Length: 229
Image 1 (cartoon, rainbow, N blue to C red):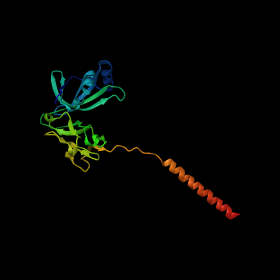
Image 2 (tube, rainbow, N blue to C red):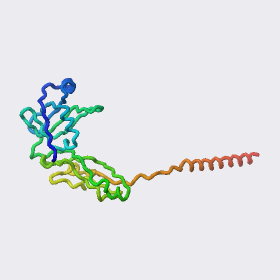
Image 3 (cartoon, rainbow, N blue to C red):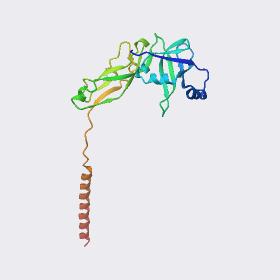
Image 4 (tube, rainbow, N blue to C red):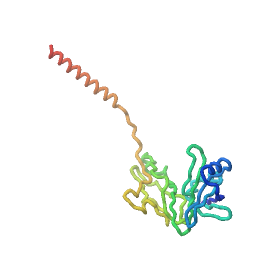
């Protein structure tokens, strides 16, 4: 892991929605919570600017984070982040305590390698369809990867890579595959043929058929009139 993340936090005693709104409006802080381990949950506050800057980095979501609460430090991972639906504001964060000897479950981003050099793209004119952009993994905290790499170089049109095709780092497993099940081995990425350009000649054909039918009907009507005469 190339990045280290450390955030300053304060214990929060003023709880409730009204208190949270005051935090954001008056102090430029957000409410958050730390839970897990053998300790009780702890309500804290964080600087909005500090966490906004941190979450701009993709690696923040797949790293061990140090939360400094007063004189104490907590080793945590981020488990949930609530954002404002319309504005670039973080509203709330959940952090889970970790222990070095206990496995954690984290969503880790997928980095696709050799997209432009992919055989199906470069030689066959295909398109890459990314089904997943992250994968849920389980590992000890010390084995947590920043991202998972998937190499697309040898894929041709019609080829696909599944969760079971990924080369996971030592000590890292796919949570979906470990649970098993018929649909566990999800497709991660596929190379598709380009969409063919369709020439729409249907209207002319329909017009011709409609004209033929109308002509036939006129002929039939003429025959009927002759019969009546």
